[in-house]
Length: 494
Ligand code: DQQ
Image (cartoon, rainbow, N blue to C red; front, top):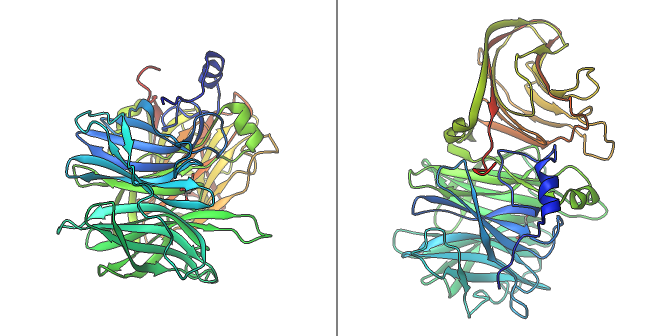
């Protein structure tokens, strides 16, 4: 059965002129997308699978969409890789999972949903010699893990992540939450990917704990991987505790893994904005590359009416932690999208009124370095209308070390999310503030000093909300350098 994303000529025309639809972030042809799945660098191509509802821009009837890239920047859509099988163990949805190389046979390990069960299933590449890996065959033995471990009351149980150790043994960490305790990453072992032995949790969180970070009642999409001489446990912390609404964030711990238990030394939120359910791959060059789902900030009705929902983050390169914080930077390949360039240097700023940067637009990369001065706050103004009625500000307070995105005036549409995001970025004495900002219509991704990220979504209503400027308040600041590049599209046929 060939399933295709629902997109007719009328919707295609609407998407092409939609002012909120990003141009250099990955998205499906139309309709719904959430988590990245099955990331693998296979025979020179990056394969990105993703949670996809091909029929509507709502989280329902989950499939795995599929795309490939040879350069990490430009993407080519491929047919949907996995669809629910009526009457099968994934009849109600093909939820998140991973991809592994089983001695030359690419294999997907995913969550099959047959309500109320969510259990581990396998699919193998029907033709491992096809570089695009278009066709997939589900294992007749699905689900290969037919039940949750006994004797425990689970909040939820889903999302396998598999790797192979040097002795050939397969290991899996699996997402879960234990009632009354917290999120958990469960360890399994197998010699053949089909028969799995449950070992124990590598780590269990504490639903009551709030410091240093809160890790919720269920860990979705856990992944354990080495980074330098340490290990990283990446989780999507999920919390649903009526009457509080469910909340989410992506977090990680760095620490030691002895083959059975993970012992953290540091914990941090990966992104204080809208990124969720991240997954990483190790590419042929040995780089650890991460993508995450950038959630929308508008109503379900607005998403359905738009005919699309969900954006993939840019590829982030992770590097070994310093003082417990993972290094994070955009993939250098993204520089190939850079077009017209403006450059300023040694600019003294002393005004809260944005000083133009010499570039404007809604698809830009910005790189600004601020030297610490006596200004209380410095930052950038984005998507500003000429009268200042619409504007988004990225602000940094040197005294508190707080980096904020102020979305209170991002949009004149009162129905979109305009709450701020903020995170602490303490700077060493004499350390400059270095912001790399990727603006792509409704998407903002900020990389601060190669160790903090902040992603968000904005929905300006005005076609002239294109102004970009620099601000300083409560004193003077020195901008060492400010660069702006217009960014091109990642779609070869646009
Ligand atoms: N999304 C998937 C689940 C996962 C969640 C379903 C995280 O497998 O737990 O679309 O966003």
